[in-house]
Length: 332
Image 1 (cartoon, rainbow, N blue to C red):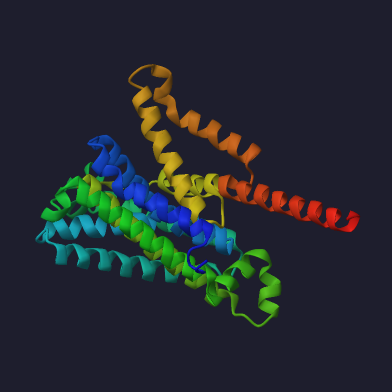
Image 2 (image 1 turned 45 degrees about the horizontal axis):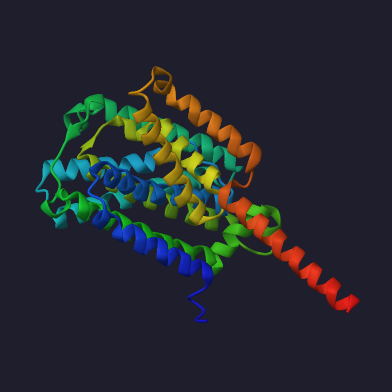
């Protein structure tokens, strides 16, 4: 078998083809919008997983980078022409700002214990939130503003396909990144930071790389998010956005990019489903309570997340098969 066509890659490819064909077998606009949001939040969750799952860094202000991308795109498309070149420039500007901010935050806090990074990102996120609220001439404060998007993206089908393809491309790039020598060092830092440093690696240097990669990707997800809504307001800087990324990562399985995608799918599906049920019975209006229950159940019964637990069962099963085979060989 070709080394690229492993069983897991074959499964991923089949799922990709099914998602590619989905818009052509159903005309449900709601389903199309939900899946588009799953794809962009999957990018956001994968960016958070680079920090938490692969480097062991907790962030309480990851929404800051998401918001930077969202506002950069929204403001530039409103102030200037809503064309494809302007959109690409807006996404690039958001990524550069997010990269600079994540570099500064990383250099200021990651030389200390990782919880300083968590607190500093939370403080910076609050700062950006206040800035967005007060700079009303540009951001329109809490009310937010609408803007036009390039004509090709007005079609929901185009936006769905672009979001799907971008999610797959970023998944492949991050998988290559996590398997690279830099990615291996990040995982070594997660397992034992002191030992990694004693081996001669400059730990701060690698942590800052993880911070910048995660920040730039979160900004990219924010840019895609506002394209689906054609609207942006200060909610993109809310702590809830960071908690969503944390939940998606933990429920799917930390340290597994596929887990981040599955987690994003489950959270977004549950969000839409419980919101629809709220029209049927008032108890579902408090859907955040059900999210809390879901989180507790997952932590109790799947402490390594869905993908982590499945991997653990698979390894145990294979181990049991090998042990059984060895016993047969000895007795034979």
